[in-house]
Each structure stands twice: as structure tokens, then as C-alpha cells.
Image 1: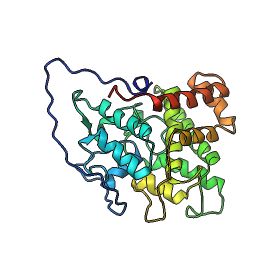
Image 2: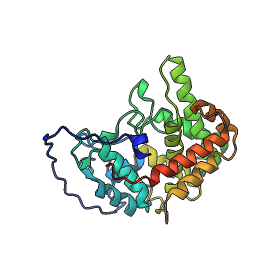
Image 3: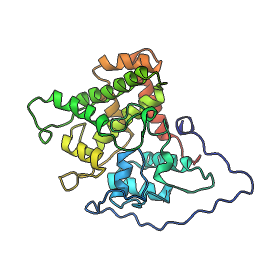
Image 4: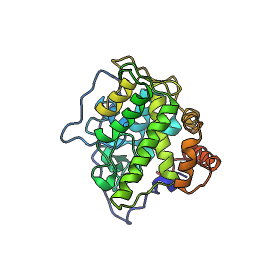
Amino acid sequence: MFSKLFGKKKDSAEGTQHPEVPVTHVVEVKWDNWSPAGPNDVRSPCPAINSLANHNILPHSGKGITKAMAVEALTKSFNIDPKIANVFAASGIIANPNHDAHSFDLNHVNKHNYIEHDGSLSRGDAAFGDGVKFDQEAFDMVLKVYREAHPGKSDDEIMTDWGTAAHARWARITASKEEHEKEEKTWIYGIKEAIMSYGETSLCLNLLGKDGVAPLQWVKIFFEQERIPYAEGWRPPTKFDQADLNHGYAEMMKGGELGVEEAKLVGIGTLVGLKAAILGLGASFIKTPSSES
């Protein structure tokens, strides 16, 4: 399943050598140690990984990250299950164009439909420019859904929930589809893209809150600044595993009204089929051994 979603690492030509520049970095969690990316630093489409580099937990340059370094950073910082951390780390190694490498730079994953996808919560679509950097216009669509669900409240007063998160996610998917159709561009949205879409929302709200509930202000800090809101009161979850991700998926599909239309989009046809595919493929993806990396 891992190779189906991210591709398999290709063998280099026999006898070809690609020496790596060793990077020395000690993974140390100090949330007050934060600064944005500089002009020579590289980043990915993922705000969680980028935040670890901005907090100097991963190399601030975003370069020379080993699999062991990435796994240690994710498990120490967010209490993420090592199986999930291994999948994220292995996907980075696989993305390195140097197929003999045992490390990666964050921008190696900057490939359309690798981890970046159309309809992202905080990135524009690749067909219309940059699908990697934060896009305020795209994220404003997400904020609009939360604000309309809580009329009269300021962003400091609004709390997230799975139901509103589902509508915010769907607003980005439908906006993406409509923009591609208007500009007569090819729009790709199958089961892989659906898993990534549900996954980014479930990851975000499991990381920032409890059972989907987090201050909207923390969500804004996370996406807009790529900073973990430790100073504002955030503390890491006690655990973060596949069961938590699956719970987020299930809660977002609970209403059903959005899932029926989405099932048609991805070519599965029914809400039951979509739920089974998201939960089943997502779980088997995480359980797949990462020896291919």
C-alpha cells in the first residue's frame, strides 16, 4: 500500500555513486525556539513538518533530514505513533531524486499529488500557480465556514468541531473542482486524494485539539505562521495513532450528506463504499512495513 500511494524508490544505475553531505542535528524540543524560514531554507506543503523546522526541532534549513531524525522529531514533539512517523519519514526518503540517499530535503516532496493535492486547506492548486506555499485566499475559505457556523463570535471565541471541519474541507474540494472546470484544466480527485484530504484535517485537529475541538486561533497560527501555539496554551496530545486518525475520518463522514456526492466524485458510488475505502486503505497504508524505503 505504501508503494501504491507514494511510489517505490527506484534503484540507481549500477556503479553510480551519489555522495551525501552529512548533516549533524540533535532533535531537541524547545517550542519557544521559533523563526520563519529564511531565503535559503526549504519547506514542504505540510505545515506540521514545516513547523518542526521553524521550531528548529528538524534542521531549520529543511535539508539533510534522515529517516531516524524525522521519526524522532515527530514522536518526541507530537507523541505520534512510530508507525505513522515512519510512513511520513519514508515518504521523504522515497521522494529524494538521489535514489542512493538516506536523507531528504523538505522540498523533495513538493510534487503534485504526492502529499500536496488539489483542494488543500491552505494551499492553492498546482494548475494555477504554487501548490506548495501557504495561500491565504485558499485558507480564508476554511475560515469563512467556521465564522458562518458561529455568527457573532470572534476568531478568539470560535472552537472547531468535526462537523464544521467536514464542511470546511468540502468547501475547498468543491471550489477546486469548480475552478478547474472554469479554466478547462484537468482535475484529479480519486481515492488517494480523498484520503489525503481527510487526513490533513484529521491530523490537524487531532494534533491541535481533543476529539476535533481546538481554538480556531490555534488553527490559524498553525497554518498561517507554521508555528505550534505552545505560548497560547497548546500541549501535545497524550497519544496520536491510527485510531485517532480513523475517528476523525468517521466523524467527518457521520452526517452523510457530503459523503454521498464525494463518493460519486472518486468513482466509488456509495457512502458506504467511500467509508470502507477511506478507513481500510488509510489503515493498511499506515501498517505497511517501510522496508521499501
